[in-house]
Image: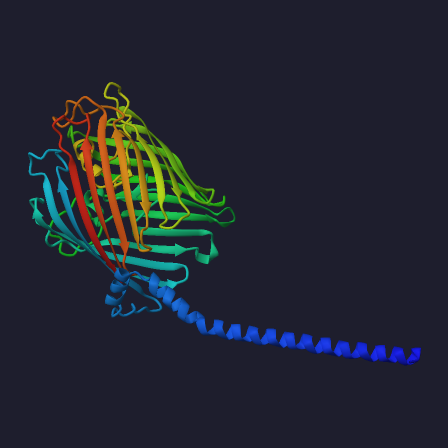
Length: 494
């Protein structure tokens, strides 16, 4: 065979080999593709649609108790709304049981067990973008099973709980004005929260004018305040006025400002000043009637650090005069620090530590050093502690106290929140020893234990349970008995 022919044969053989290899490779690839297709089909057979998976997931997450209440209230129609009128309704039902709550003695008939029914109906109209009018009517009656006042509270008056006008930046000016009867709350409620402490949580209003200067570039508001509270409700007409209810022991006028700034991220800065004229203040223990002219200057800081830690602190100083002839100078201070850590885990647990200091009066000095809570006479530390102060300076007039406390909270279900707390309290001064047989020579006020469980059942229905136990210390007589409080509440809003 010639070399030329031999080369041709080799070239033909190489071509045939390439074709064979290509065919084999194609066959392999086809086999793999068919195998992959079979695998995909098998997977598709076992995989459920996303909608079904999500549906099953949501079914698992829905709590049966919450679902029961949602189904039970599904028949309630949506609230009708009109262009120029908004309205709403709230019914609050409470049962409360108090034991030894004033006298700290089980030898007296100092036990109350009763129901509270508070009904509220509100309306709001916005005739213009810059104008709003708000009205809320309230009535609360009480049905006593044991204890109770001499005057029946089974039927109670209907009164104007709120009635105010809002001017919101008229003519695009950086100013807003709210004037009339209104609820007013600042910060943690350390200075301004409740203007009607003598009627409990039936109402909180003050008669006031609040003019706000908005400094938007600095995320800051400056509120100019004029506040007045009266011993009884004599400014507005009352429906079914069965009796004259005491709202606060004194006639009070207050003037000042409150600055709130959120210029710094995750921080709130507040600074305030109030001049307060208190006419005819009566202290419960020594029954003396006096007059106070107080200047309160203070500030508050609240911020979030490291995403989960919250710090809240406030400090205020009071100075002025007390007495019919302004013959006693005032020098008092109040402060608190609260640190809270929210754990970034399931059930949203939180742990908080707090310290409060409210100065007390040293009876050996001419200066009055006792802190006056002004418009913050509410259950600042729980309901039980508002009533022992009746024996000192008046209901919920927190003063003369150091408090160190710790609390823990978590949400075992998405619609529940459970909080347990413990507080130890001691007096700054032993001011009232000798004025009543209730007080002794020590300064240990005692220990407070509290548990609260809150439940949000639907967007319209919520409830909670609360239990407190206070063990008196050496500040009170050695025979003082523990004080107990129990409450449950059901609230329906529409």
